[in-house]
Image (cartoon, rainbow, N blue to C red; front, side):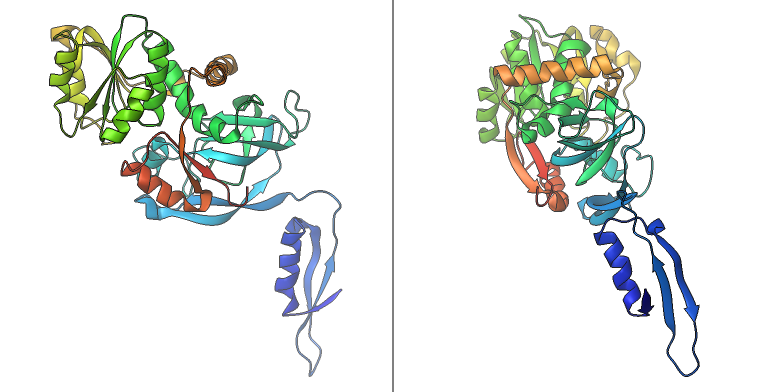
Length: 382
């Protein structure tokens, strides 16, 4: 094949469209100059019948830390799965506050640039050599590491994906994996909620808060929830909150004392952080637990250990990833979440969907508390 210079870009474009690796082009562009003529290039093109070593997919990328404007919609390469891996074509991607923490640098990403996102559901499109237990066509979901779900496709460790029951819609699965398993370990393992307990849930109408209220109510607890608006208060009550507090209009500590006749609550689940931390401690009864699992308003100020002594309080800052270390722990947590969704114990509200390419707007709305329930990103064209 003889190519004049303008044809070279077309050749490279053709190889990408055919999903060929650049290694399929051999003896590239040996140059011959003929007297009195334009440069001409000779290329020998060898097309392999095997699949591409590297394809290109669309993804959100972060090249610098900052506001939502640093989220960029780009082409990224994706290879084939290796031993112990699967390649998944995402159908729905969960949006979580932890994505914002990484974008801002509150948590440090392992690499820069990086693709954010820690939750998705999709279809297996390829499996690594010799892998058993997962096959092409399986609907699977994952939550946690590796980060990178804001993409049309991704490579995942096979032991970190879980099967999604056929009764669960992919958008529901994507919205409930991280938030649902977070709710599961918070009420079942971190502090075990039991009948007769009174608990306080901040951001009760949020993605995790909504599930916490439903789950704790099903376990027999009295649930108090803080919300920002009357609309969110109505949703929280529908989710099992026995008492709602409009924190912009009411003093949370005073209201909790009134509701509990001055006793306080057994546990506070606090995902807000700086703005609520001191009040959360004040709401606890003797030997109560403050479970600080998020910091949407910023990191709490340092607390001297002696501040816990007057009521012998317990304080923990847990992470889901330390409660799903083993494959058995992961399957147990996800299985309990999906079972509660299927039985109706948990109602998953996917109240907002955005195209994946508009992830920046979705994060801005979440950060500015313009959303309620779960937020899901849908790959463009999915």
